[in-house]
Length: 438
Image (cartoon, rainbow, N blue to C red; front, top):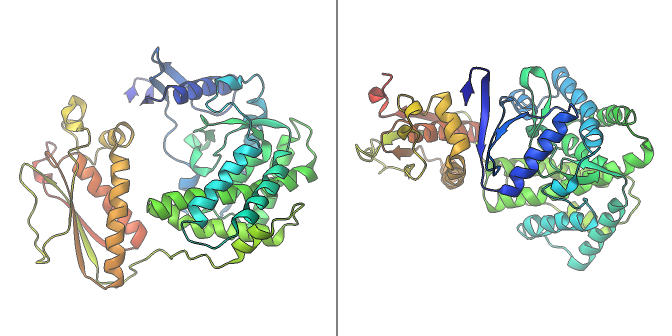
């Protein structure tokens, strides 16, 4: 949404408790001078609100754009973020009414055990990795009991990773904290420095840990040795929790970017179990994680592979386009179940290539969730075709006029295929000559 003062983000969401927590925390943190988006207006029932637009440049985006190489510029970002994090945790904790948070209870032993159970069911059991359930549960109890003794508790973001750090104008702002709760300081630092795909070098992690402690000890008294012990403990716990999440999203729901992160998370856990001296015994966990983990490497087409994919958008008014390859066609997806921006006056003369339409479909419709299912279905076929040296596949997206939804979907699909498989993709919009701007 744009006005005389620039752009703002308008949000409508029917989860009243989550909205209330986000709005309360945002205003509380802003009053403390902390770097979060400003709330500009809200509806009386808090089902809709306007917030400051911080743009879409994130720390993760900077990492990805640079091929995850840890450059001096990336190091500078991390140094600034770890210096700001204690302010969010400690200053943000001061005067905070946790009864108004979405999760009010501290991050205690019971909450940790829930995360570890997630790892057991959505990673170990999904992959059919053998383990002794009684012995593993005993290790979980020992690890969580020890971590549960970490004190004191301050504000814990819960998902403090590079995707949730935005960089408007080169500054650093924090988002997605509505699930925050009381918890130990180490957890958020671990979430940032041990984020699986970011793969920070261990010497860099150690230096950033020291930078964080320097900043935090300016606000509260910290026993650095004790803090560091629990820090590695939470790194192990977070790594196991992350594998559970990746197992659900990647192994069960077939979302490729989660699958790609599993080897990085495994590497973190194996390093921790090998290199750190643990004050508690976890023999079954060690044994389980020393076994070969059967994760299939992502399939890539590579240069010179014969498979070429044609992605196109079309109008159902003209009918499903005929196959020109002689292979009988491929996937055809109907986008008409997604809200049509073409019915709204500001978008009628625009297309699925227009930033305003992209923003609408991304934030105000179910289009991205719709596409996640399609990406998973298409990936199964593409990987099979790559392995069998097939040479052609077509993927078509239709909507009423072939101008908004199908165009957006086709563009996203082409981007997804090129990035995931390094494959030759041709993209065409069959109604382009009929678009109002042409």
